[in-house]
Length: 267
Image 1: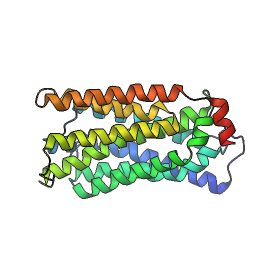
Image 2: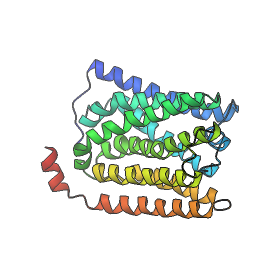
Image 3: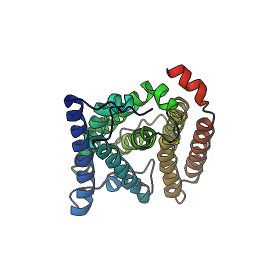
């Protein structure tokens, strides 16, 4: 599926910007941890986690995501990489998303709560919507196609983690500011958030048929299970059931792919 059409100068400019955005996201994320400036992502999440808590080690997934984004971005500036349909359509959205997650690290370090909400939901939207809009071409990619492993997977992993991290960010800020509506208990609000995440995870996976999107979501929910066992058993087990549902559902949905039909539809 990958095109051998060489990129135009304008397209190469976009690719360089994509690389710059990826480097910015990685340098800011790793630099904040190395320098200990402000709050880390885990510290920010733990600051007001009375409603929903995720184990700190769950945030280690950023290392895998950063590596995937670097592979995605570096590949684009290599001379032999052609201008495929997905590289073309996902380029600018991915640059915006990567810039957004880098700025989120800055906002979290400064405890700029409203900015973190806007940035994380904005970054999720700009990467997830294009993936959904290009679901046909994504499903039609051959298993060994480089665009599947080096374009779709890195961006799907980023979108998946943001899908679980964005509601957590919102609940954390609302809890810390006392803005969580009292009409329901905090546990119920947490369960509602998890339920929404599960529905989104399965709906998106049904469209793009990519396990890479669901895997970070399941990982985040397992982190919630681990963190909540000691203080909120019902919520912990609810998170575990949700994680299993996402992972098993994603595998089943992805294995249902009938490539011949998908290619005919997307052609």
